[in-house]
Length: 279
Image (cartoon, rainbow, N blue to C red; front, side, top):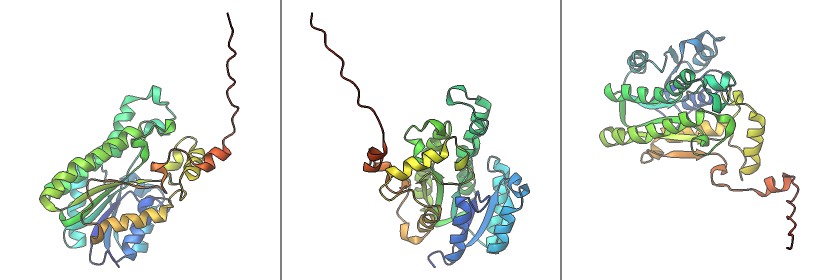
């Protein structure tokens, strides 16, 4: 049990398709005590998070991660519930109203875009700032957020989430310096393969997206459960000196240019050479 005696907070468990849900289960299986949290609306959506809390014998606390006052109350209640400072935190939060409303990238509604940034990226900074000011993290703790390679490469249907994830990763590097320098706390992001979560499946043409990554990756797409296990390793003492990194957990996709599978399955007509006319 590599997390025995450790205490943590898991953000974003909505249902059993959520990466955060699997991470929570793995944390408890590895001996950790945890507190679950999600937006208040998630507690009104069929009781998924409450069911997970019952199964794992832990507390679930509603909190809007875009509101500093909610985060402050959450951290206070979590440390009281867990009986001390926190060893690890998972930020698994992301949502785009423009994607949900099928707005094209060239016709974004900017009010919605600001909401996307607040929920998907700024919430990470707000969370870390509250943890930092309250000195709520134990030395050698671990803070982790989930991201996607769309932060570095263009995927048309990923829309404004590309910018949100790029900002999220930047916050990890910037805040990682202060947390590491002053409290030996590490801050990282995991760039996971496309995964059939509630949020991921909401992206237009997701099935094609998923199939493309599967064909391009030497190991295939990384399953959700394996991502959860990777998170556990980053919460453990085995990765004490890994910080300010964006870590790809994607079956090798991020280092590929072209795969033989893709070339074999790609049908095309060779371009015809232009005829030259002699004068």
